Length: 429
Image (cartoon, rainbow, N blue to C red; front, side, top):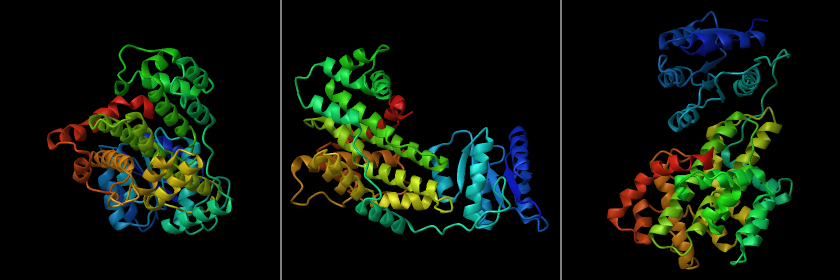
C-alpha cells in the first residue's frame, strides 16, 4: 500500500527538514511548500494526493494566514494542523474559524506529531496509519454542541459525572476569614499548606495591579502587604486554576485563553467597583472571577471525554459553541455546591440575560451583574476575550449608566484593559 503524504507549509528549511524526518519515521511521506504557489501546486497535483497539511501560521515569509485562507477556499475538507512558536489571540481565533484539527508548538516533537496524526486520522475519516498500525478505525461522528452539552448535563444529573469539590485550601481559608479579626499569622498558616498557592500569592504581591513596589520574596511579607481580603481573591484564583488540567494540546490552549480572560475581567471589575465606591471591591473580584466557572467545568469534562473516547471527533468551534451557550447553568450549579452564597449563584446564572431589572434581583446583585458585564464587554472589545462574537447581555453604555459612571471616565476603563493585562501577567502564566 502506498504511503500517505502530508504537506508541510513552512518557509523555515530547518523546521521542514526536522518535521520531514519525524514523518518518515512514522511511515509517512512529506511534501514541502515554502510559498503560496508551491503549496497550491502540491494540492493541485493529481498524481500525488495530499492527505493533510502542517502549516506554520506565523511564518511571515510564507504568509501562513493567507495560505490557510486560500487552502480552505479550495480544499475545505483538508485536515490542517498548526505548527507555531507561541501564537497570538487573533491567530488562535483564526485557527478555530479555519477548523484546524490541532495546534502543536515549535520545535515540534515526536509525541506531539504522533498525537496530531491520530487526530487527523479521526477527523479525516480516512485510514491514515497510526504509528505501528496499518490503519485507523472509523471515528465516532461528533455531536452537535447542544447535544454534547446535554449529554454532559444528563451525566451530571445521574451522578456519573460529579461536580468538583471545592479545593480544601479554599474551604479552610474561607472559614478562617469568616472571623473579621483573624490575625495575619492564621492566614499564613493556611496558605503554607499549599506551596503552589503560596507561590502565586508572592508573585501577585509584586504585580502593579496590587500596588507592588519593591521585591517581596516571602509569603509573610506578601500577606502583610496585601491584607486578608486580597489574599482570599488571589488564593481563590490559584486554587481554581489548579482544578483544571488538560492532556490534549488544543484544550490546553483554549483554557489558557479562557483563564487569561477571566483574570483580566475580574481585575478590571475590581477597579470599576472602586470607581463606584462599591462596599466590597474584593468580593466583586471574586464574584467576577467565578461567574464564568461553568466554562472551566464544561471544558474540563469535554476534554476528558475526548481523551477517553479516542475516536470522538469534536472541533474547537463545537467546543466553544457548547461553552458559550450552556455555561451559566453549570456555573451556578457548581457555585451552589461550593456554598458560595446567593450573590455568586445569581451572577453566574443571570449574567448573560438581556437586562437585570427582574424584581427578584436585589440592588447589590444588580450592581455586581453590571460590573461583571461591563468588565466582560470591555475585555472582549479589546480583543482579550475567549469568543470572537459578542455574548448576550446589556450594552456597555447601559451598564455604565446603571453604575453611574460619567461619560468622561468611560474611555479610561476601556484603555485600562491592555494595561491591566500587562500588570497581571504573573497571575496568568
